[in-house]
Image (cartoon, rainbow, N blue to C red; front, side, top):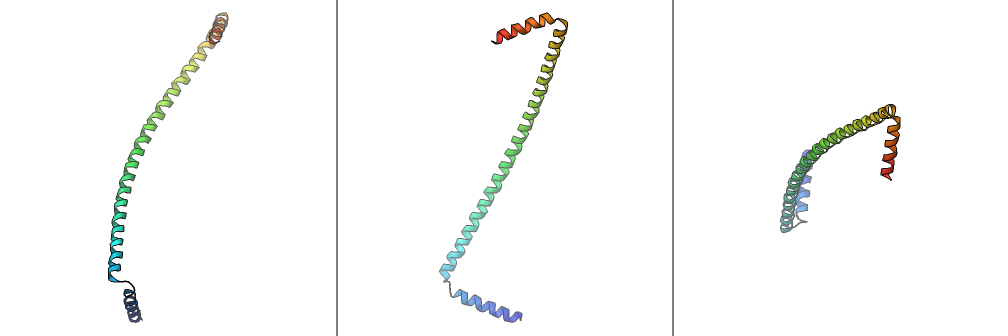
Length: 112
């Protein structure tokens, strides 16, 4: 059975060779080789591009993480400062209510 298949395959190949001229076949092979070279070059370029993009992404992520940490630290400092100011205002209002009222009125007048 295998012997019959190989004879059929050989006959098919021989009949197909008659359909395409040798110069056309060489042109097809040359076009395939050219396409293969272009694809390999494109693959190399894409690999290099991906490596550069990955490196830049890692740098940007690192920088953004540092910025987030810095901003978080600033936010904590501001929260503490405002809480301390509120606490001091409360103490001032308890100890010297008339002075606190005058100060509030003066600040309100300055804002207008």
